[in-house]
Amino acid sequence: MEIYQVSVFLENQAGKLSEVTNLLAENGIDLRAINIAESSDYGVLRVITSDSNRAVEILREHGFIVNCTAVLGVSVPDRPGGLAHLLRQLAEEKFDVEYMYSVFGQANGLAYMILRVDNIDTVRAALEKDGIHTADCVELGIK
Amino acid sequence: MSGKYFQPEIECADPAEIKKIQSEKLVKQVRHVWDNVPYYRAKMEAKGVTPDDIHGVEDLYKLPFLSKDDLRESYPYGLMGCSREEVVRIHSTSGTTGKRVIAYYTQEDLDIWSDCTARAIVAAGGDKTDVVQVSYGYGLFTGGFGLNDGSNKVGCMTLPMSSGNTERQLQFMVDLGSTILCCTPSYAAYLGESIKEAGLSDKIHLKAGIFGAEAWSEEMRRDIEKSLGLKAYDIYGLTELTGPGVAYECEAQHGMHINEDHFIAEIIDPDTEEVLPEGTVGELVFTSLDKKGFPMLRYRTHDICVLNREKCSCGRTFIKMAKPMGRSDDMLIIKGVNVFPSQIEAVLLEEGFPANYQIIVDRVNNSDTLEVQVEMTPELFSDNLGKISDVEKQLIGSLKAMLGIYAKVRLVAPKSITRSEGKAVRVIDKRKI
Ligand SMILES: [Zn+2]
Image (cartoon, rainbow over all chains, first blue to last red; front, side, top):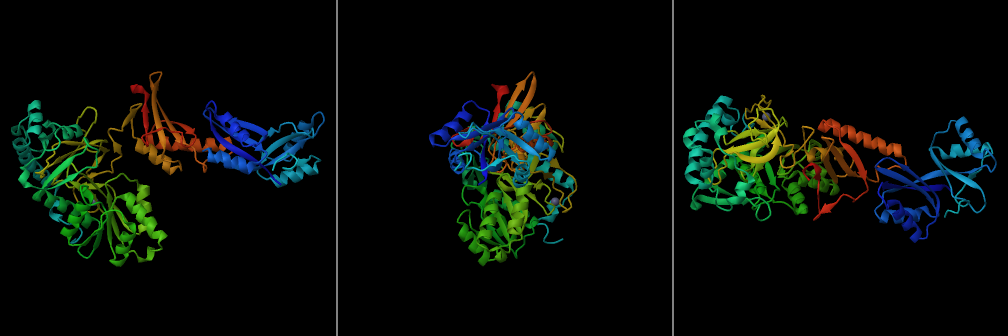
């Protein structure tokens, strides 16, 4: 199953980010990864959670503007230069990665990155071919 | 030519002839007010003007202005221009107590008013073969009676529907084959949607609509024309002056002809009260030349607008007023440029933003700044910051094109713009704090 990222519009106001994380925590939703992109006035919070549908529901109920996008989870080879290898592959294939960020440490000891690309299936196939393992939601403990 | 004008001898008269009529009427009207309205007489005396100083339109500038405050102060009878016995009807604005205006009409006032609205109906293509559905409110509000009486005068079959009860409106519209609809533009838009929902589009025979009493955009005009399958005409008026029909739109749909045989329009600088030349943007001031029950001399409307005397393709010679672009009370002067919240609102709607916004004006290092705070919508949101910033840039560009100055745009979370008593505070001018 595809991994879904939940994006939230945040005003750059003290307390807004913790309001989101508190809401998720109160509802028993765990964070697997978090990333924030900011301009001077507002930001976009992107999270991978244990239950994206529920996260979207709760945040919308509380008046947040939210959307949900499929993203690609990639396991970073566990050896020196693992990340560099991944980035080199992406560059060689000329894939346009809008942004990427890392996933919190997993119980299996592997390191993962989240990639935001338009053509998920193509990128997934190309990386797998290069021997880079892509993750599904079960692997990241996502419902 | 017949059928195109209600009173062609006046509507298409030589402008010099109109000016002559205005001058003669003005001299008489000033005398009438001096003799009958002590409140205004005192204002003239305070300014050192007497009726002997007024020989024609060229002397109009000598007269004092009447403002909303004057109307409030003289409430209820202070500006009545005739004896109580001569009054046959009143109308009133919807203002809350203290702000309410009550206007008085003699029988002659009503006759002249219905001439004015009859001109509007004929200009919209109406004649006695038409079925006119008047869906403005009847009562203290001037809309219903105003168009009703004009429609009677033209000889149309008049449906005094009043506003509301949409189901009944549609039933009469279909069963009696209404050809002209008169109501507020927002109700027209609503009727258009209801017709579509009810699947009645094929059964509607409307050809024209006369819509006024609230601000509406050209975009809204196009939408209404499409949904109702008619040509939409604007109409202007104020209860203080008479009601709808002070000015009316013709087939050119490019400004409203002012009934100059009954009203003189001036444009003034709202701050200095100086009269501005025709073609300049400023506050619209009206003098009613015939009104006896509630005569207004130089009444400040607070509507910001521009007059245009260029020859109109319809053949009428009356000067035209553009759709008011805002209220002088709302006008902000930012970096020397006139800015109206209504302009900003129009841009926001066009760009797909909600009309809930806040304008923050400040002065930083002796220079004015303008910030427009607008609420983000799910449709405009993206997980990609670049896409949001594109939306922001597009809005900044459109605002610049409309206002002529740079406005900083600040996207805020939904429902975060403060509302007081349910009504949003649109403008925060920190320069005044
Ligand atoms: Zn015309």
